[in-house]
Amino acid sequence: MSRVIDHPFSPEALQARHGTGYRWRVLLTVMLGTMASIMASTIVNVAVPDMSHVFTLGQERAQWLSAGFMAAMTISMLLTPWLLERFGYRHTYGGAIALLALGGIGGGVGWNIDWVLAMRAVEGLAAGVLQPIPAIIVLQTFGRHEQGKAMGIFGFGVVLAPAIGPSIGGVLVEAFGWRSIFFVVVPFCVAAFALGWRYLPHSSPGGVPVNHHRRQLDVPGLLLLTAAVLCLLNGLVHLHDQAHALAFGLLLASAVATFGFITRQRRATHPMMQLSLFGNHTFSWGGVVAFIYGMALFGSTYLVPVFMQLALKLPPSQAGAVLLPAGIALAVTIPVAGRLADRLAFHRTLSAGVLLLAVSFWLMLSVGLTTALGIITLWAIVGRIGLGLVLPSLNLGAVRSLPMALLPYGASGINFLRQLGGAVGVSVVGIMLQWRLVVHAADPVRAFHETFFLLGAICAAAVVAAWRMKPAEADKPASPGDNPEP
Image (cartoon, rainbow, N blue to C red; front, side, top):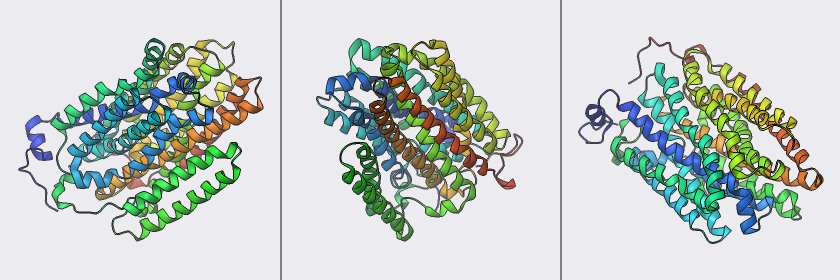
């Protein structure tokens, strides 16, 4: 298909208007939107104990404040390629940002837990659409020799959200109550929307004009995917209550819906997920790493603030402050890891990062009521350094060898698997914690220790898959002297 250069918001027109620094402005634009979506995902965790008290929630219900967001995010993520093709970068990005702001405002004015959970789902739907866009932008806008650097700078900005979020959230919860944390994302959304309208092209990926696309959305596939995810998460929740028959029925329904979804994707003219991607060795192992890594990452994002408040009896503001140095360490690590991704085989930094993340979870087993806050902070820093090594290598390494036409599907597929792992991880952590709290009713710290051990074991399993992502000779990073891709 031909590219349209005379459109005022075509990639060529925007490049001519804003000069050689245009690609960095685009990077800043998608970075702000991703910061808003990540902050919406993580900042609520600090308020879980307060909201549990206000709405009289048990652990199995409270975890849906995070798991519901993750489920909605997972479901919507595979829509990104279709939305980009049908509506282009500007309208897709702007619409998702507006929806994210609506969910934040709606959650802040919520009057019961069902409405708040619905608004968390709205936020999750928007975040799912936003998440794959930065990787597509970087791979199509930056030359191969700059892609790691761009992802490092992008990551530096993005990790400020989970680094600052818990600290701000803890202060807001203590000063103004749980409602205030929902409004934090709104200023980010306003800025991201304005920049997106100014700098993002009207066209779809590759510069193809949006009016050339009349591809129908795979509605049956979307419905099957929704059924599979929701039945899976609800089935996991019911595994440790009295409704065992319901739990196994839901898990069976999830398996059936998953089989139906895969069958549909094989036969559909325009599938949501390109299953042919899994024929690529690096992508398929990257998918395994993304799923396991998502389980450990998002499970711990939910677990750590709850551990510090319920087991260690720290107030929300102090719990958030303990995580701040770890967030700064992550922000410092990511640009360095981005540079390494341009110079080293990504499977090495990826394996080292996943291993450090596992070690940090096992180090938490040494934390008790008398442990100094400095030690807790140090163990959190170890994990965040590992996380910083993982992010650029996983986002670039898994999709770098794919054909340009499949980049949107590859980026959304890897993000989908990571978020699916995250949704499962949050549920597994909630279930494991509830179970062990019952077993160790007199010693809640031990219950948390056993849950951290599980997370470490899950994360360690990803090391093998990460090493198997070793790229072929043709897929190794380009040297700085190589010419950038158009």
